[in-house]
Length: 305
Image (cartoon, rainbow, N blue to C red; front, side, top):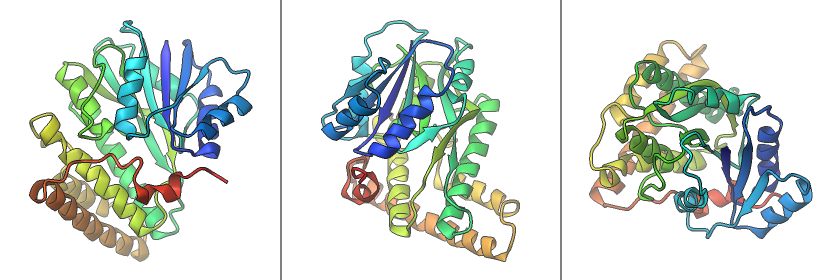
């Protein structure tokens, strides 16, 4: 059985599209879709749009954050079958054709415990923030592919990833799920793999404040691993690793003077956010919050009109 978990926050239109993107695929194994959302409007949407679809289930989470909701859902999946696969995705993204089967192919190896999909930006490259989103995704996808091929650890994308059932039944909520879950899978001596053809399409922030908030939250989630896991793997995403990737892409990604200028601005903006996140985490000792329910995200996660 394939358990597909979609976490959303009142994003009715995009959640409907996310569900359809899974239903439209020719998944080779039995599956069900669980939509987690604190809003009853989402439940009504499911009843209206998918009233004949037995594969879809609504889960009313307690509005305590994404990590908390995922822990509840992992406990809810009452299965001890190691062949069962749990796929995680979001209500504001949609998966590409055959993405699920591409993920399942990786699990044919019994030593694989976690598989990451490939996020692709939907933003236009003709504006600065859109360009930044394409650079960020291509940098990380290139890094994940390289580390996967060399059998090394890497952090996955929360937009689309999957785990083998039974390896872990819960995870600490003090760090983001796409950081801590693959780390726990790795600690249990299973491999983390990258499925390049398992595409997931993402609309990234369209203004600087939203970009800064998202980047700050992602970095804090990574830095929090030191508290919840107890060590810090230098192969993962650090400020030095990001600087090295950025430098290597600087010489091959921009195509004109405008893009080189945008790239330099992005580098300084990243440095600023890294320093800010590290100061808040290490000096002020602020605890990580997954931000899924935070005020700064309500502009993009409110119920669609």
